[in-house]
Image 1 (tube, one colour):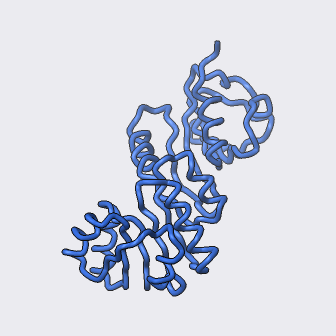
Image 2 (cartoon, one colour):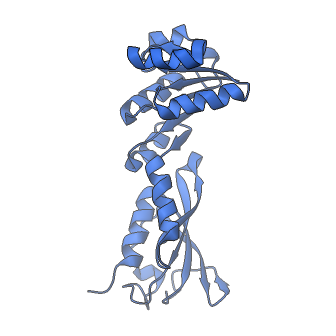
Length: 221
């Protein structure tokens, strides 16, 4: 496969080294002359001095025949531009973008980026998985649909304990698919009453995840 990587930072450097070692044709683009020089001393012809945000640069490196374009600069806007240009101008089938601000992940997917990778979100999810019992834990991401499956245990003191699902103001972007209560699986409906220590599994967007977190983890006033 031919892969083009935009951004010669540490992520781009190690990605290029690994992909080359796996036998893939890989080209790393770096616009900073000093950084390019340092990279080329080790990676040789696998590094090209140029701005991956510029169509002329991407044309010179043969973007039209690339199987995958990966944007891993430290700037979210640049990563979006690189991937959108690859798809729209050069018809690259698969694009992967590093997203530094997790709030942009849904936007990137809506704008046609195939896969987003957020180091911040990844670390946050790992931390949440280690937090006490009543934290929200992401289980699976359906990136092409912009959805995520999450698990959350209802604290006994939550404001929604004793209320039916239809009374809880959750957006359509948050769908509670399963409740596990005392080892019993419950497929909920609008009349299902939430109890303390219920284990909830939901299919959510980023907006729905925040709404679910807010509703369930808030205590009564």
